[in-house]
Image (cartoon, rainbow, N blue to C red; front, side, top):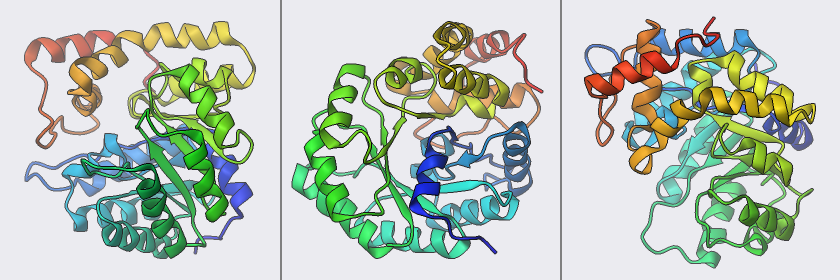
Length: 305
Protein backbone atom coordinates (compact mmCIF):
# COMPACT_ATOMS: atom_id res chain seq x y z
CA UNK A 1 0.00 0.00 0.00
CA UNK A 2 1.32 3.46 -0.90
CA UNK A 3 2.08 5.77 2.03
CA UNK A 4 0.71 9.27 1.47
CA UNK A 5 3.52 11.82 1.60
CA UNK A 6 3.32 15.49 2.53
CA UNK A 7 3.42 18.17 -0.14
CA UNK A 8 6.88 19.11 1.14
CA UNK A 9 8.10 15.55 0.55
CA UNK A 10 6.52 15.53 -2.88
CA UNK A 11 8.16 18.86 -3.73
CA UNK A 12 11.53 17.42 -2.74
CA UNK A 13 11.01 14.55 -5.17
CA UNK A 14 10.69 17.06 -8.01
CA UNK A 15 14.23 18.29 -7.32
CA UNK A 16 15.62 15.25 -9.10
CA UNK A 17 16.08 13.71 -12.51
CA UNK A 18 12.40 13.40 -13.36
CA UNK A 19 12.46 10.42 -15.71
CA UNK A 20 9.89 10.15 -18.49
CA UNK A 21 9.72 6.43 -19.33
CA UNK A 22 9.05 5.33 -22.89
CA UNK A 23 6.06 3.12 -23.59
CA UNK A 24 7.38 0.08 -25.50
CA UNK A 25 5.08 -1.71 -27.94
CA UNK A 26 4.96 -5.42 -28.73
CA UNK A 27 4.84 -7.08 -32.14
CA UNK A 28 1.06 -6.72 -32.20
CA UNK A 29 1.24 -2.98 -31.55
CA UNK A 30 0.01 -3.08 -27.96
CA UNK A 31 1.81 -1.99 -24.81
CA UNK A 32 4.62 -4.44 -24.03
CA UNK A 33 4.03 -4.97 -20.32
CA UNK A 34 7.15 -7.05 -19.69
CA UNK A 35 9.46 -4.64 -21.52
CA UNK A 36 7.91 -1.63 -19.76
CA UNK A 37 8.49 -3.07 -16.31
CA UNK A 38 12.03 -4.11 -17.23
CA UNK A 39 12.86 -0.61 -18.49
CA UNK A 40 11.38 0.94 -15.37
CA UNK A 41 13.25 -1.47 -13.11
CA UNK A 42 16.51 -0.51 -14.82
CA UNK A 43 15.85 3.17 -14.05
CA UNK A 44 15.03 2.49 -10.40
CA UNK A 45 17.99 0.17 -9.89
CA UNK A 46 20.27 2.86 -11.32
CA UNK A 47 19.11 5.33 -8.66
CA UNK A 48 16.26 7.22 -10.33
CA UNK A 49 13.70 8.20 -7.68
CA UNK A 50 11.06 10.11 -9.63
CA UNK A 51 9.22 8.94 -12.75
CA UNK A 52 6.44 10.34 -14.94
CA UNK A 53 4.44 7.66 -16.75
CA UNK A 54 2.30 9.06 -19.56
CA UNK A 55 4.67 11.90 -20.34
CA UNK A 56 5.46 13.04 -23.86
CA UNK A 57 8.39 10.61 -24.18
CA UNK A 58 5.85 7.94 -23.19
CA UNK A 59 3.71 8.91 -26.24
CA UNK A 60 0.87 10.16 -24.04
CA UNK A 61 -1.16 11.55 -26.95
CA UNK A 62 -0.85 8.32 -28.97
CA UNK A 63 -2.12 6.05 -26.20
CA UNK A 64 -5.73 5.01 -25.72
CA UNK A 65 -7.36 5.77 -22.35
CA UNK A 66 -7.17 2.12 -21.26
CA UNK A 67 -3.49 2.03 -22.21
CA UNK A 68 -2.74 5.14 -20.18
CA UNK A 69 -4.39 3.53 -17.17
CA UNK A 70 -2.44 0.32 -17.80
CA UNK A 71 0.85 2.22 -17.87
CA UNK A 72 0.01 3.78 -14.49
CA UNK A 73 -0.81 0.40 -13.00
CA UNK A 74 2.36 -1.20 -14.37
CA UNK A 75 4.38 1.66 -12.93
CA UNK A 76 2.86 1.32 -9.48
CA UNK A 77 3.35 -2.45 -9.55
CA UNK A 78 7.08 -2.04 -10.26
CA UNK A 79 7.78 1.07 -8.19
CA UNK A 80 9.83 0.81 -5.00
CA UNK A 81 8.45 2.19 -1.71
CA UNK A 82 10.59 5.30 -2.10
CA UNK A 83 9.68 5.96 -5.72
CA UNK A 84 7.69 9.12 -6.44
CA UNK A 85 5.30 8.66 -9.36
CA UNK A 86 3.96 11.73 -11.17
CA UNK A 87 1.29 10.62 -13.63
CA UNK A 88 0.77 12.63 -16.79
CA UNK A 89 -2.86 13.68 -17.30
CA UNK A 90 -4.56 15.99 -19.76
CA UNK A 91 -7.07 16.45 -22.60
CA UNK A 92 -10.47 17.89 -21.59
CA UNK A 93 -11.16 18.67 -17.94
CA UNK A 94 -13.37 15.62 -17.18
CA UNK A 95 -10.83 13.29 -18.82
CA UNK A 96 -7.96 14.86 -16.89
CA UNK A 97 -9.85 14.64 -13.59
CA UNK A 98 -10.77 10.99 -14.19
CA UNK A 99 -7.14 10.18 -14.98
CA UNK A 100 -5.92 12.04 -11.90
CA UNK A 101 -8.37 10.18 -9.67
CA UNK A 102 -7.31 6.89 -11.19
CA UNK A 103 -3.68 7.78 -10.54
CA UNK A 104 -4.40 8.57 -6.91
CA UNK A 105 -6.40 5.39 -6.50
CA UNK A 106 -3.51 3.38 -7.95
CA UNK A 107 -1.16 4.90 -5.36
CA UNK A 108 0.53 7.75 -7.24
CA UNK A 109 1.41 10.85 -5.22
CA UNK A 110 1.33 13.50 -7.95
CA UNK A 111 0.03 14.35 -11.38
CA UNK A 112 1.67 16.39 -14.12
CA UNK A 113 -0.92 18.28 -16.17
CA UNK A 114 -0.03 18.46 -19.86
CA UNK A 115 -0.51 21.82 -21.51
CA UNK A 116 -4.12 22.34 -22.62
CA UNK A 117 -4.60 21.08 -26.18
CA UNK A 118 -6.76 23.87 -27.51
CA UNK A 119 -6.19 26.56 -30.14
CA UNK A 120 -7.50 29.29 -27.82
CA UNK A 121 -5.97 29.50 -24.36
CA UNK A 122 -6.51 32.65 -22.30
CA UNK A 123 -4.46 33.22 -19.13
CA UNK A 124 -7.57 33.16 -16.95
CA UNK A 125 -8.80 30.07 -18.75
CA UNK A 126 -5.43 28.40 -18.12
CA UNK A 127 -5.92 29.03 -14.40
CA UNK A 128 -9.50 27.71 -14.55
CA UNK A 129 -8.37 24.54 -16.33
CA UNK A 130 -5.67 23.68 -13.80
CA UNK A 131 -7.74 24.78 -10.82
CA UNK A 132 -10.57 22.42 -11.78
CA UNK A 133 -8.15 19.50 -11.90
CA UNK A 134 -6.27 20.44 -8.73
CA UNK A 135 -9.45 20.96 -6.70
CA UNK A 136 -10.77 17.56 -7.79
CA UNK A 137 -7.74 15.78 -6.26
CA UNK A 138 -6.75 17.91 -3.24
CA UNK A 139 -4.72 15.07 -1.77
CA UNK A 140 -2.40 14.89 -4.80
CA UNK A 141 0.46 17.18 -5.68
CA UNK A 142 -0.18 18.91 -9.01
CA UNK A 143 2.51 20.05 -11.45
CA UNK A 144 1.49 22.16 -14.48
CA UNK A 145 3.53 21.58 -17.63
CA UNK A 146 4.20 25.03 -19.12
CA UNK A 147 5.21 25.24 -22.79
CA UNK A 148 3.62 28.62 -23.58
CA UNK A 149 6.16 31.43 -23.50
CA UNK A 150 3.38 34.00 -23.24
CA UNK A 151 2.19 32.67 -19.89
CA UNK A 152 3.42 35.03 -17.19
CA UNK A 153 4.57 34.25 -13.70
CA UNK A 154 1.74 36.21 -12.13
CA UNK A 155 -0.75 33.77 -13.71
CA UNK A 156 1.07 30.77 -12.26
CA UNK A 157 1.22 32.58 -8.94
CA UNK A 158 -2.56 33.05 -8.92
CA UNK A 159 -3.03 29.33 -9.46
CA UNK A 160 -0.73 28.63 -6.53
CA UNK A 161 -2.68 30.99 -4.29
CA UNK A 162 -5.92 29.21 -5.13
CA UNK A 163 -4.60 25.66 -4.94
CA UNK A 164 -2.11 24.71 -2.21
CA UNK A 165 -1.58 21.31 -3.85
CA UNK A 166 -0.03 22.92 -6.94
CA UNK A 167 3.49 22.33 -5.68
CA UNK A 168 5.76 22.55 -8.71
CA UNK A 169 6.05 23.72 -12.29
CA UNK A 170 7.59 21.90 -15.22
CA UNK A 171 8.79 24.80 -17.35
CA UNK A 172 9.59 23.95 -20.98
CA UNK A 173 10.04 27.25 -22.78
CA UNK A 174 13.50 27.44 -24.43
CA UNK A 175 14.48 30.77 -22.88
CA UNK A 176 16.45 30.80 -19.63
CA UNK A 177 15.98 34.53 -19.10
CA UNK A 178 12.23 34.20 -19.52
CA UNK A 179 12.23 31.28 -17.09
CA UNK A 180 14.14 33.31 -14.50
CA UNK A 181 11.57 36.11 -14.70
CA UNK A 182 8.54 33.79 -14.64
CA UNK A 183 9.85 31.84 -11.65
CA UNK A 184 10.45 35.01 -9.66
CA UNK A 185 7.13 36.57 -10.61
CA UNK A 186 5.27 33.37 -9.67
CA UNK A 187 7.27 32.67 -6.53
CA UNK A 188 10.73 31.14 -6.71
CA UNK A 189 10.29 29.50 -3.31
CA UNK A 190 6.55 28.83 -3.63
CA UNK A 191 7.03 26.13 -6.27
CA UNK A 192 9.66 23.55 -7.09
CA UNK A 193 10.88 24.48 -10.56
CA UNK A 194 11.69 21.66 -12.96
CA UNK A 195 13.63 22.35 -16.17
CA UNK A 196 11.26 20.70 -18.61
CA UNK A 197 13.58 20.70 -21.62
CA UNK A 198 15.91 18.08 -20.19
CA UNK A 199 19.69 17.93 -19.96
CA UNK A 200 20.64 20.46 -22.64
CA UNK A 201 18.78 23.23 -20.81
CA UNK A 202 19.38 21.99 -17.27
CA UNK A 203 22.63 23.91 -16.54
CA UNK A 204 21.26 27.30 -17.65
CA UNK A 205 17.91 26.80 -15.93
CA UNK A 206 19.62 25.53 -12.80
CA UNK A 207 21.69 28.70 -12.61
CA UNK A 208 18.54 30.82 -12.31
CA UNK A 209 16.29 28.71 -10.10
CA UNK A 210 15.51 25.17 -11.30
CA UNK A 211 16.33 22.36 -8.89
CA UNK A 212 15.35 19.40 -11.04
CA UNK A 213 15.13 18.47 -14.70
CA UNK A 214 13.12 16.07 -16.82
CA UNK A 215 14.79 13.46 -18.99
CA UNK A 216 13.96 11.10 -21.80
CA UNK A 217 17.62 10.33 -22.37
CA UNK A 218 17.67 8.69 -18.92
CA UNK A 219 15.90 5.70 -20.52
CA UNK A 220 19.03 5.12 -22.58
CA UNK A 221 21.77 5.97 -20.07
CA UNK A 222 20.53 6.48 -16.51
CA UNK A 223 23.99 7.03 -15.07
CA UNK A 224 24.73 9.83 -17.53
CA UNK A 225 21.65 11.80 -16.46
CA UNK A 226 22.34 11.15 -12.78
CA UNK A 227 25.91 12.38 -13.23
CA UNK A 228 24.61 15.70 -14.53
CA UNK A 229 22.31 15.98 -11.50
CA UNK A 230 25.21 15.29 -9.15
CA UNK A 231 27.37 17.91 -10.86
CA UNK A 232 24.64 20.56 -10.74
CA UNK A 233 23.93 19.90 -7.07
CA UNK A 234 27.64 20.25 -6.34
CA UNK A 235 27.82 23.51 -8.27
CA UNK A 236 30.37 21.87 -10.56
CA UNK A 237 29.34 23.42 -13.85
CA UNK A 238 32.49 22.17 -15.59
CA UNK A 239 31.46 18.59 -14.85
CA UNK A 240 27.86 19.32 -15.86
CA UNK A 241 29.00 20.76 -19.17
CA UNK A 242 31.19 17.73 -19.77
CA UNK A 243 28.02 15.64 -19.68
CA UNK A 244 26.30 18.30 -21.82
CA UNK A 245 28.99 17.94 -24.49
CA UNK A 246 28.72 14.15 -24.41
CA UNK A 247 24.99 14.11 -25.06
CA UNK A 248 24.63 17.23 -27.19
CA UNK A 249 24.47 15.57 -30.62
CA UNK A 250 22.03 12.93 -29.38
CA UNK A 251 19.70 15.56 -27.94
CA UNK A 252 20.08 17.77 -31.00
CA UNK A 253 18.96 14.84 -33.15
CA UNK A 254 15.86 14.51 -30.97
CA UNK A 255 15.16 18.24 -31.30
CA UNK A 256 15.48 18.47 -35.10
CA UNK A 257 12.42 19.61 -37.07
CA UNK A 258 10.54 20.73 -33.97
CA UNK A 259 11.30 17.49 -32.13
CA UNK A 260 9.81 15.30 -34.87
CA UNK A 261 11.96 12.34 -33.82
CA UNK A 262 12.07 13.03 -30.09
CA UNK A 263 10.74 9.61 -29.07
CA UNK A 264 12.00 7.75 -32.14
CA UNK A 265 15.62 8.51 -31.29
CA UNK A 266 15.24 7.27 -27.72
CA UNK A 267 13.50 4.08 -28.78
CA UNK A 268 16.11 3.49 -31.48
CA UNK A 269 18.87 3.72 -28.87
CA UNK A 270 16.98 1.25 -26.67
CA UNK A 271 16.51 -1.08 -29.64
CA UNK A 272 20.26 -0.95 -30.30
CA UNK A 273 20.71 -2.13 -26.71
CA UNK A 274 18.11 -4.87 -27.19
CA UNK A 275 15.81 -3.46 -24.50
CA UNK A 276 12.64 -2.88 -26.52
CA UNK A 277 11.33 -2.60 -30.06
CA UNK A 278 11.89 0.64 -31.95
CA UNK A 279 8.20 0.95 -32.87
CA UNK A 280 6.46 4.30 -32.34
CA UNK A 281 2.93 5.38 -33.19
CA UNK A 282 1.84 8.08 -35.64
CA UNK A 283 2.36 10.98 -35.86
CA UNK A 284 5.87 9.85 -34.80
CA UNK A 285 7.76 7.55 -37.16
CA UNK A 286 10.60 5.02 -36.97
CA UNK A 287 13.94 6.49 -38.06
CA UNK A 288 15.37 5.91 -41.51
CA UNK A 289 18.46 3.71 -41.89
CA UNK A 290 20.97 6.58 -41.95
CA UNK A 291 19.49 8.09 -38.79
CA UNK A 292 19.48 4.71 -37.09
CA UNK A 293 23.17 4.28 -37.83
CA UNK A 294 23.85 7.74 -36.44
CA UNK A 295 22.07 6.93 -33.17
CA UNK A 296 24.08 3.74 -32.77
CA UNK A 297 27.29 5.67 -33.32
CA UNK A 298 26.36 8.44 -30.90
CA UNK A 299 25.79 6.13 -27.93
CA UNK A 300 28.99 4.16 -28.52
CA UNK A 301 31.19 4.57 -25.46
CA UNK A 302 28.40 5.73 -23.14
CA UNK A 303 27.91 4.02 -19.79
CA UNK A 304 24.86 1.95 -20.71
CA UNK A 305 25.06 -0.58 -17.89
